[in-house]
Every structure is written in structure tokens, then in C-alpha cells.
Length: 309
Image (cartoon, rainbow, N blue to C red; front, side):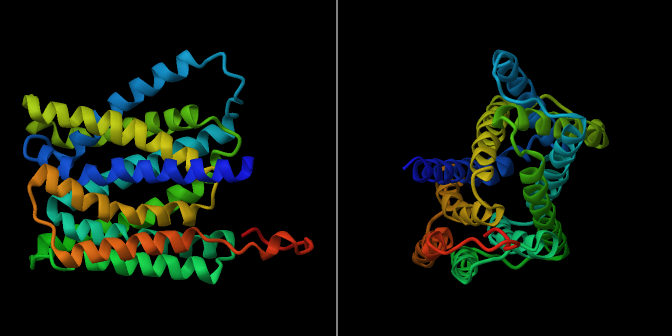
């Protein structure tokens, strides 16, 4: 019963993270009108690091183990990958490309993570899970197909950056899961965010000539990106990631296009078409299929040297 409850909480946590992160595309697109993509990341994750630092200080008497020097280096590296490198690619990619392209490309991230797990960790992927990933990816294609616009070289370059972001995100999932073993989710997210914010602060100097005080709306949206999408999203995602395989966690993120459509309606006033709704149902079906695991191994004898599922 405890194992089942833990699994449900882990799934709910990653779904909630997907909800927050899916809204970040529409919100970032709005903020880009006033603030550069690198400056957005610097402000967003610096604020998030301060908030997380306060949370860690309040929990300093917690019995959770502190990372040793080697683990801390790996955690910081995962922060540079999953925050600085990934969000540099995402923010610039979204600026050059379209929200629909970004949603489609994000849906391919589970495949990238699965392939990287196979190559690096030699993880065995059940056929049912592979089918779920493929089905969810196909559903994401349906969601964005009718909304795609024909673009030029800038959009193509943005799509390439978003694809590269998927490889970086896959590396973050694998490294973050390894480096975060036995670590408290708050402290883990704090160290990752500090490293990511430091990287963004350096990168944002490239936009120093364009710095100006953002308006009230842009400032409020930046606060939302920092509090909900950065602190809330990463805390929830790290909690779930440490309790399931990284390919399953990333597969749940195929819900991002579904939630992204809803965000586009609320924030950007877009119209949802029937094919997009059908694609959303396919995505949900694919995510559900990817979460299923065969139970027949529970009664089978354990064989020495067999890899984990």
C-alpha cells in the first residue's frame, strides 16, 4: 500500500510540474516583448535561487543527508545542464520559432531520454512503455499539426536549438537522477538552481546593452516563471523523478502540449480546434500506457545480474 501511494504521489508531482512548465511557453513569449531571452533566465532563476535558499535555511535542522563534495559537483553540473544550457536553448528557440513547433519538439524528449538511457545506462525498456512513448509523441504531433505555420530560416534555426535542448534535457534527467540519490528534493533543487542561475547571470551580460526596466505585466509574469515554473516545477519534478525511471517521468511530460494548448487559450487567446483536442486524448492515452508496468515479475524469482526495469 505504501509503495502504491508513493507511486501515485510521484506521478501526481510530475503531472503538476508539467502543468506549470506547459504554461511557461505562453508566458515566456509574452515576456520576450520586453526582456531578452538570456535576461529572462537570469532573473527567473536568481529569484528562484533566493526563494529556495530561504527554504533550505528554514529546513537546516532537517535530518536529510547533505551532499558530499563529489555529489555536489555532479548536482551543480546537472543544474548547468538542466537550467542554464537547456533554458538558453529553449528561450532562444521559442523566440525564433513558434509555440506549436516547441510543443511538438518537446514531445520528442522522452524518445531522446529513452535512447540515451539505452546507450549510457543499458536500461531495459518494456515494449509497452516504448509503445506509450511513441503513441504520446504521435498525439503531440496531432495537437500541433494544424497550428504549425510555414517559416523561414530563423524558425528552422529555432527548431534546431529546441532539438538540441532535448538532448541536454535527457542528459539532465540521467545525471540528476544519479547525483540526487539520497538527497532531499529541496536541497537538491536549490543547488541545481544556484548553479543554473550563476550560469545565466554570466550569459545575460551579452544582453547588457538592451537592459531596461520591464513593465508591470512583464514583471508579474517573470515572478510567475520564477515561483511557479522554476521553484514549484523543479521541486515537484525532482520529487517524482527520484521515485520512478527517468524515461517514465519524461513521458509524463508529453502532457505539456495538452496543457500548453489551454495556456495558449487563456494567455494568448488562441482557438482550439477539434484535431488538437483529439491529439490531446491520444497523448493522455500514451502517457497512461507508458505508466503501465508488467506485474508478472513480482512473482518470478530474482536472477542475479539482471538489470533493473
